[in-house]
Length: 344
Image (cartoon, rainbow, N blue to C red; front, side, top):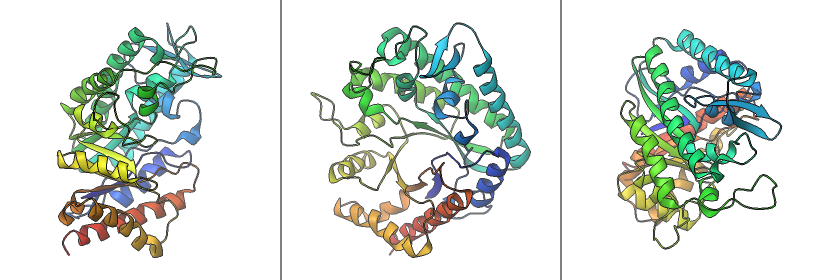
């Protein structure tokens, strides 16, 4: 059993964020539940540190720049791409300086390929997701670029066992045709589920070759959403694509969502409950434990399976570093309580 956080962190000091995160989560020894440090994203730093810019800058052999409506693909590298690439290089240098001796599990996260295609623009004004050829090219470039990014992390931290988290924040909108057109008045046609699955599978297969786990964070999606004509949930699609784990917020997860979770757990895919943790206090830990344990029991899942959950503190980029640290303490306590409950 492990616990970690989604990946975004408040503030603008990357080196300080690394020191805090590795200090809180990278404690040596055989600890169960064990903390898993992560390479933080600090969107408060502005252009290039945002989720879309960070992922788009990793695309292999494709170029980007920033426009008022968002990031777009262009024919040649420009100032925005250069700034983002330098920011990522400095972050990797600071990671090497502040975590060089780290040994153990480590997580990196990047916006997922379909959510990137939905939020990235073509030079002529359409979204990438609207063009079959463009989205195919972006997915191929994405797989290569994220693989290279993970390889750079492994190179500077050779004793780390890497997990890659793909944040698919608008996947159900892609599948259901709810992504707005450039005018904002229309909607882009849905992408067929089999195409979405195949695109994800290609990315996951490549990343799985050299990394311990490839997980999908489905925050923002309806887990129980079903393919038209098929009795397959959204998380079932992610499992079919090869994800070794799926993360999703437990607050507000309805009975259909929990049933979809049970389906993939029975298939051997781990569930990573995302917990609203920032600023939480010790007095609230019991409620956090019961919220997960009660649903688990109502599904008829074995109590021992609670020990196989991997808890995740929800990102809180608008909170203070103090609140974010408190969130890590809170999720640690909830994980400990669930682990103990698994063996009661």
